[in-house]
Amino acid sequence: MFKKNLNRFLKSLIFPSLVFPTMVNPSLPVSASPPTGFNQYKSNVEGGECKEVEYPSSTTGVNRKAMIYTPPRYSESDKYNVLYLFHGIGGDHLEWYNGGNVVNILDNLYAENKLKPMIVVMPNGRAMRDDRAIGDAFAPDKVAAFDNFQNDLFNDLIPFIESNYSILTNRENHAIAGLSMGGGQALNFGLKYLDYFAHVGAFSPAPNTNSPNVLFADIEAIISDLKTLWISCGDKDDLLNVSKGVHSYCIEKEIPHTWHLISGGHDFTFWKDSLHQFLQVIFKDEQSEIFK
Ligand code: FER
Image (tube, rainbow, N blue to C red):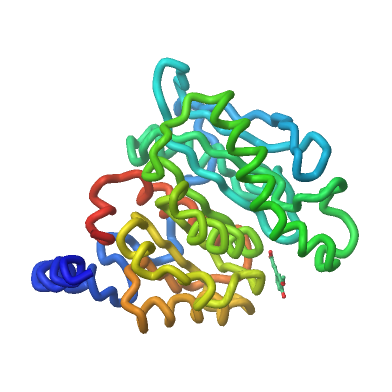
């Protein structure tokens, strides 16, 4: 404890903005202006593969669907980082694929050599027998199923991914992120299961986000173990109070994090920009400086 505080104090002399974070990681762009074409198909860019798979879920008693992106030249003889990426309240496993141009964003970043090789797993975060995105998205049983997804994730999906894909096993190689309802899940599950995840990202997290004193129940472990804590929101988003609450708590408790409040609303223009930036931060050694 004393040693950790001493380390933080010494580091604060060299990197004050990293140890006692201000608003943003200064090395990252903050505007909602990703480069032109970042989410568009380019015929000269080598593509990864994105496939729908089914995995058996003991949590729900049925087979469940997920989209899995594997990078260009994916090979079983290499080992890969893995990002679990979640959709919002009205979506399903196809939301990032159809609405978020996730394949183009990833393919284009690989072509520019801007991200570490990773598999991206996009599940259906509504862990119930009938998980279709139909009817009242706010029905209590559906909202409860978003919380229940942590059981499906750890007992069913992660074991399926680990036994079917060539995955790096250290926590530093695992990230969890999502938009809105899925952003709440990423915070709730990622900060709780620190022994599995070291990178956590929430893009306009929704009111399913646990209150900060629950999220940050183990502040010491979070500060020492987490490599990325990313929270972003559009300034015109009706749910801004949720992410602001998490950000303010981090400031108050001196929890290092990246906070991006950028011009935007509760939509894919904002979420695509957030994903594009988050992908470039995770799994990189230099980012760990923020959390040491
Ligand atoms: C709520 C408002 C919005 C809520 C969830 C959402 C659980 C989710 C929005 C989204 O995913 O886009 O009160 O409560």
